[in-house]
Figure 1 (cartoon, rainbow, N blue to C red):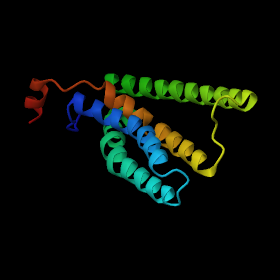
Figure 2 (cartoon, rainbow, N blue to C red):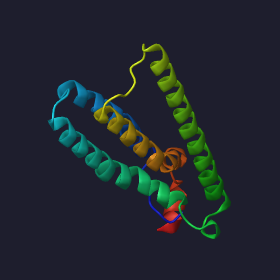
Figure 3 (cartoon, rainbow, N blue to C red):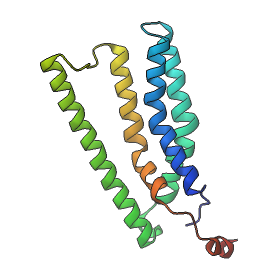
Figure 4 (tube, rainbow, N blue to C red):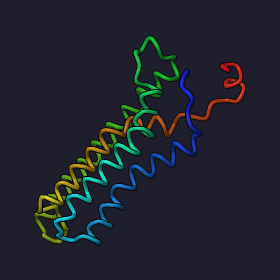
Length: 157
């Protein structure tokens, strides 16, 4: 591996902040700015900051550095990690979509569950799906990649 990575603890923190930060910040925005015309501007600022300032530089690029290369350029361990990450990302995304559809069906049928009904609510769902689907394979790679061994770093230097 020719890229220097942050420690595994820092990479895991970055993944948690990305995937927990959007839902928490969106809930806070809904509490602070319910039905406000400023919600849209605040939400755009949140998405730009989270994706552009955190997600892409800290999570997405790590995933690309670890496994987004030609198969011939990766060793067997990297190939197996990448393939497992994409498979697990598909499984997680498919499960979330299935649970979302079941939740929408139950909410529409019984009326007991809150389901998105306004543009603002569906916009929140769209951006949550975008963040999840765009970053999930790289996040899985960043989460699973162990810290490099100290002697391997000394040999490379």
